Structures are given as C-alpha cells and as structure tokens.
Image (cartoon, rainbow, N blue to C red):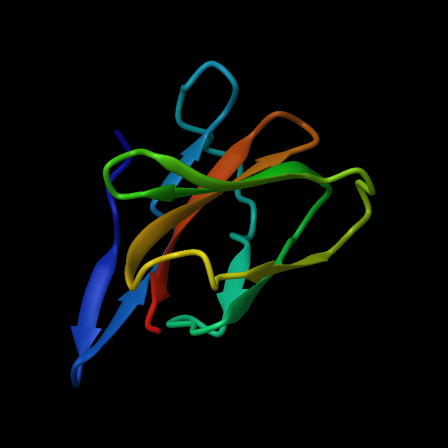
Length: 112
C-alpha cells in the first residue's frame, strides 16, 4: 500500500498524493501532477481538477465501500463537479483512473 504524506499545521490537515499505481498495482514512478479537490474540506459539492485525460472517478468510504462513481466520457474533460449531499460527514478517498490506466488517490473531507 502507498504511504501518505500528511502534515498538520495550526489545526489544518494538508494531504498530498496518497497513492499512485499503474494497472498492475506497481507504484508508478512517473512524475505526474496529482489531481486536486476544491474546496477540501467540502460541504455540498467539490470540484476535481484533472491534470491529464481520465476515464473514471470513484469515491470510497474509509471502510472501502464505493459511494460514488462516474465514468468520464469526454477524455479531455479537465474538471468534474461532485455533489456531496448523499455523503455523511467524514473522510473519503477519491480515486481517478486516467486514460493511460494509471491512477491516483486523494483524500476528501466532507463537513456537512
């Protein structure tokens, strides 16, 4: 499992990319900018900004349950807005699978 880079500054948690693997679950050493989530923490919705073409966005609870999934038909789409009304307050993992089959995972905090 990939290690996370976590820092706490004046009560604010900052999380950097917590997982990069290719389709064979081998760590991807290629230097790719991670996608970003804004705002994070979020209330009703969050935007996921993609650094390269993607095919799927999934959101998982920390227990591993898939709570949201969207297939990306327009591979050139650079932003996806996710409505969070159906998610409980808590921490989730957002996973993006890119068109080249690599993937990245970032943490999302839902505050409502």
